[in-house]
Length: 275
Image (cartoon, rainbow, N blue to C red):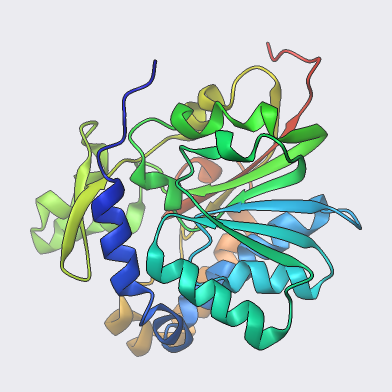
């Protein structure tokens, strides 16, 4: 048996509050849009015409709308009441009811979807960092996949160089917060809850032997984290240079093991075992 995640109520409240402002925040923060495009560039080569996508922690529906407009069927899931409302409103406004469906649940409750099969499972921007044990989520994947299905998890790892650099400002607690195995306190819209950080190897182990890693990439390695708005606004040319460095190095070892997030894509084969 896996431990029950105690974060659910707080996470629901925090992201329901954030749902009211998130889209405007992203529009005002060019690095968030840049990061999202890096994710899309990694994902799109692994989608085929007619792919059915299951999206976890769908947020305000930005990714679902993007995929649906490319012709993919998407089932959005999210725990947050506010996020579910935002997604539902967007679907109506964009007239995408025929391509996007919404189901409110935690990603630890995916057994509720066992009657459906998917070609691609997608979780963006660290939503899975709210769970203490990734196996609470990944244990469901084999029962949700068509054979040969793929999963993309965008997860925050323990080592983020830009956070560690906060040592130079004497902010020791923030610099090392990701290394606390018992979880670090996060604060979203005044609501505190625990977040947990996972290495590429921990993600691989959580997926299990029937998944083969086919893509591994750092997201936000040289490029600053989006929360550094003041630095970003003052050093636009430098940011562009850092983004070029990311383009060159982010997919190569050892750079693809650290960063603000990791983009990890794996393929499911019901008959294979990894060495």
